[in-house]
Image (cartoon, rainbow, N blue to C red):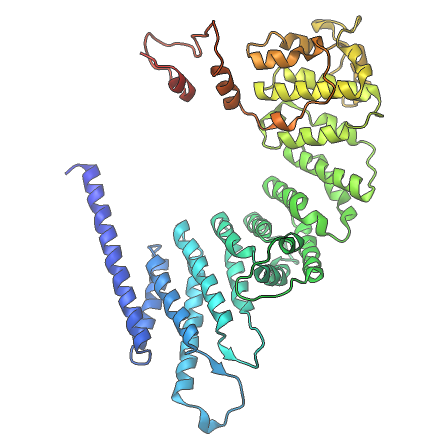
Length: 514
């Protein structure tokens, strides 16, 4: 028997044994539910098997599903419910003691389920999370203690679930993504924010993994107002969302997060969360000024995200930052074109340079820096740069002197100083746009056409940058290959021999090679 056939045979055996085990567990669970007192050992065996399977890192899904069905049914029947009222000693019956025994097994089973959240296989741990949340819903609808009619939510169990997700040595992105199904409900939002501040360490700095898990969890939970504005949904309790209460806990939680020591990954993760969700809920956003200014000096994506935060503070909270244009100018580096935050940078630059009252020397420096970067940028980014430069010319007509500057110098003797950090001192007004003129001879017609704007009359309205910000190299290729042309470039890649397929997905899609 070949190795592949042997592997297939082993897989079939494993699947059949798994199905047989699942049937046995279901049978034991059904037998227990049919006669709970006479089949107590069945429940003990199922829980013990769950713990053993998790310890051996084997499949736990069949066992989790059986445990879930058993306790959801017991809760639905109120067979574990104990009436809270003063009882005489003579009233204590064997039924009450059996209910206490069931509650003890329920508690132990829930702990075993939480341990399965750390299972090394994602599917197994995700099922453990699903089982735990279903039991929380069932217990809310059928509480363990019958009281005077007040709604009971098992806060302690939700806390245990959140704690299990906040591992200190393993990133639980799969669990956080699964929790999205629950965290959009108003009741879950409320109780999560009631718990989260207490899960944030205050006396010490947690591990990097814990910080990333905590920030990921915060990112999945709605922050109040956006959930109220949408059609409200509830997991198990219909309630009015107390936004002031939630906002108080958001501020308390964020003050802890800010005091932790962050590496580059969590720093970037925290800034994204701050900009997308947290900032609008903070009581005193201006207190973030020092943090954002320090982040500006880190470089890369972190500086760009910090710049966006500072822009919000300038726009909405009257923050003054005198060197903001120097910071923005320094962010236009070649590596920015290879990050997913490229569109964000152009968006911010477009806003910062939208005023027609800016000094011409400042705007000219941005034009020259962008034009110089266009010589080494990917084709899709060259088009963005050229459209952006054209919009700046329309806002500042006096900059048209750069197009054909009589004493602007040539390539070897360009007066513009690329390495100057202060854009005003870069001598951009004394230069000319020979870079854009050079791009008119670009091999790609779309780039060459975009560069010809300096030789044609300007349009009456600015170009829409949004239409080109998300274009990638595949879009450009597909557009060019769809055109009909009289001349064809036959050598896309350097040949290594005659009639040999030289690879490349696009090559094989568009040409038949013999």
